[in-house]
Length: 111
Image (tube, rainbow, N blue to C red; front, side, top):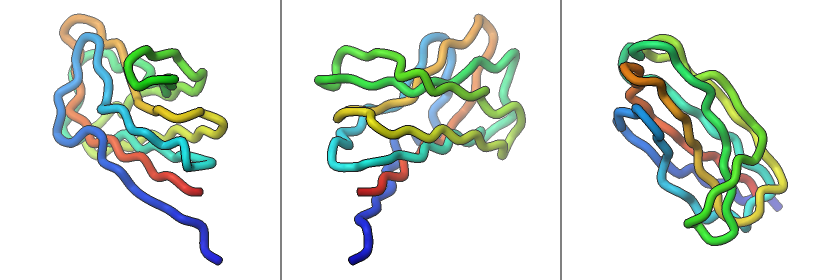
């Protein structure tokens, strides 16, 4: 039997600045997630760390601990891998004033 897999686009062509986050995804059925963050345009300013956040209810968020630097150039991709995340997932980042990144964020989930 093949494992169940799905891909969800949780941010498409969004300009992230300030306190930014992807749409949350209910993914409690999955045993692991691979998250890709791609810069669709040349980022401006200093790029922050992107972090995985988890939630018991999809409204209150806690940093899971996995972090990676946001892409530093157009077309750049960063990857976050997580297991044991409960039910709700999202990606978030805090940009300094004047910094931004236009992103495509996809979650790849495997049962």
